[in-house]
Image 1: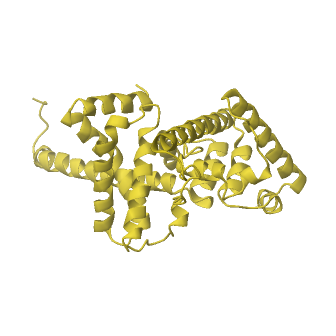
Image 2: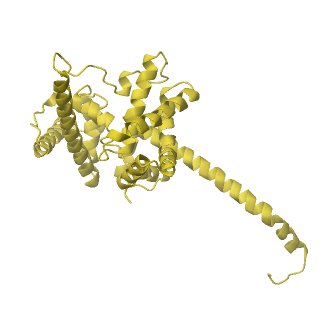
Image 3: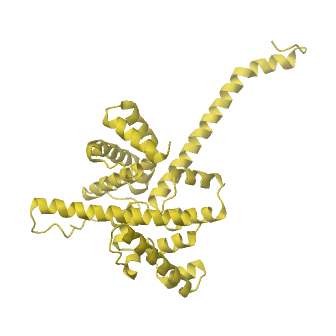
Amino acid sequence: MSAGAADTYLVEAIQRGDPRAWREVIERYQGRLLAFARRMLAQRSEAEDVVQETFLGLLRSLPTYDTSRSLETYLFAILRNKLSDQFRRGAKLQRRSLEQLDLDDASPAWLSDETPSGHLAAHEAVERQREALVRCLRQWAEQCSEQHRFQDLIVAEMLLVLGLRNKEAASDLELSETAVAGIKFRILERWRQLMQDQGLDGDLDGGDLASGSTIARIWRDEGVSCPKRSMLGRYLLGILDEDWNNFIEFHAVAAGCPRCAANLDDLREEERRDTAARQAMRERFFASSVGLLSRRTSAPDAPDS
């Protein structure tokens, strides 16, 4: 069963009131959510509280949960909102400002002198456009990774996430500025095509690769280019090819994706727990057999019973 299908199954089971499914969701996601919160908050107790609020937020929103959306992405979105609330109440973020959490508090343009029904219709239209744009960006990022066009992904993140100019990206990648401009042009052209396929107008300009653009916010909020957790696990094991390895190092370390960094922290913690469990098992096996070992070495050879 794919991760998406498994998430859908769990959500539907929780909606039916299955406590086992709810426990599984908590066990599956608590580690990475806590690792993310710990990077933001000074006290572990604060991080645990905000993760607990995140799970409660998921329960409250289940009646309107869109199963086409990644459950992990949805949980991280709730968590970012909870961290924003925490910040507004006066809690200090340890390493990142509110702006670095990619939380857009500005009121959307459609909140003006319209009727409530007009507000709702405008909001739904904005959400549909946003969802279509997310699908376009995800499709492009998946095509890049499948075809090992990681240079395109890295250039996109340099411009969108790090806010670098063409000249700066070219210097970091040891390319000519003309080459980076060509990559940027190819990216925008492909996005226009995908957007038109989704019924969007595809009206893009160079500003849409700026770090403060709508696309940049969506890119970060939705984890458009984030590798799957299984791929991050293979990265930690050192069994990825060089292209994948270089991309994950750039994405998680240089570009500082907090979501992937949290997943890596959680995977490392899982490995430490697994190591401790294996050590405990070895000790148990040793303790249960060392007596037999001492008897075998002190007595004449005898057939095994």
